[in-house]
Image (cartoon, rainbow, N blue to C red; front, side, top):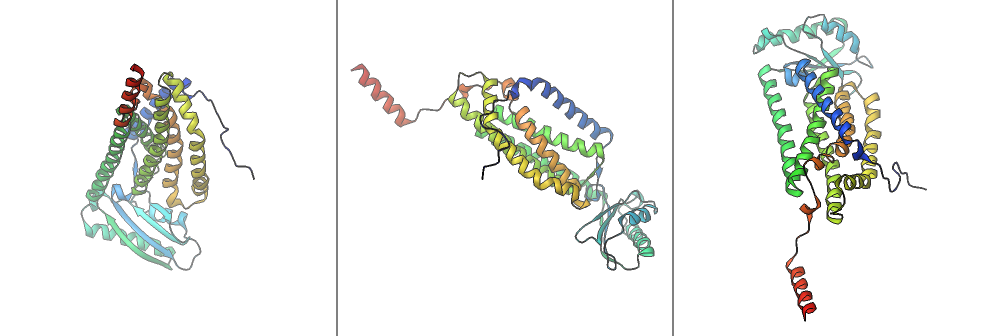
Length: 328
């Protein structure tokens, strides 16, 4: 049986030839993403915006009537509810945002939950309410702040690690690539107004980890090639390094997408945002490793002289011995 090869051996693609146009496009996409975030904003879920979540099971039905529930609860005037299946097909989660008048008022929040439950039971007497939970606006604001700190700390720690392992230019390049990936992911959520919840924060952290892993593989090969070919022009060396890691990069991305794309189209609605974020993150993470993290090294002035191996004490003694022998 022959091995499946998505990338031929000894590829010689001139990736760096198009580095300036791709960088311009990426900068436009980053600016557009943050423009959407500033103008349209993110569609925060209950975790980040506050509200109520009611989990219910329809005991005498094979599937929960999601469309009918959305219409019934929406008529109550608490905004568009978020209704998603979880677990079995007859189990649903109903999330609504609390009005400002109910913020910090447990009695008002309880009254709203009773109205929602009564509206559900009016047409579905068999429904069993599993749980009712309320998240206040203050707590959700703390969640948002903590999530931002977590993302910032992860990106900063990663940059410091790469700085220590390689050179400061590599740390800057990795940080910019991660900023690119996170910005485009947030831009997608702002554009399509997908619900932004704690699940998505977990997805972004996974994207950061994937992008970092891919970037380090490319950077490690660049460092090795810089030691071997210190006189080679840097754009040519970067192209060589990227081509040497291309098969590994494509195979890793393809393997992940094989598992994620069916989940994106056929998985439960509750996992759609999480899966969409990771699928986009794989694409932009692979792209940024090639067209963001590598070309920036040219503009930051990386050279092979930074990676000249230091002479150990044994090697120095051997060199001195050879020099004495040649003089005698």
